[in-house]
Image (cartoon, rainbow, N blue to C red; front, side, top):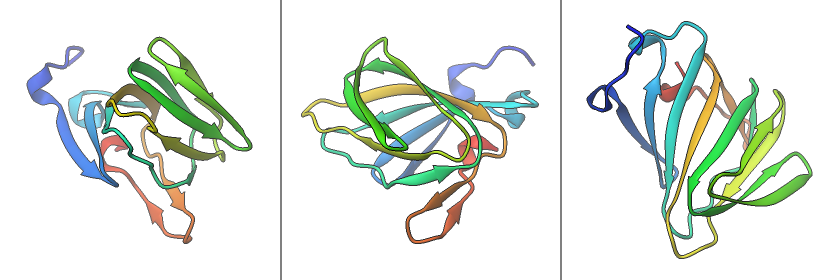
Length: 124
């Protein structure tokens, strides 16, 4: 099943954002999970620490991405890599939505600031 059609994507909403899952075990991937993130204007995602490396590619809009102690403003066409164990924070401080593509290994978990752990359904 190497081809994934738009109607096979599954949307999940959490923390004010929309995560549209395309590549995952349910669509034929053994190792990778990829999804499109839709962040509305003004959205600030909760800081979290990731279990697996993640890559980010901004499709449209501008956002602030902080990986560990280093932050950057990213716009359409910019990319970033967060190593496993990194603390991430993402914010859309503009008045326009942001869309980005994210890829990681299947099984990613994220630990939130309160110590709780989530296993995002778009990464399994």
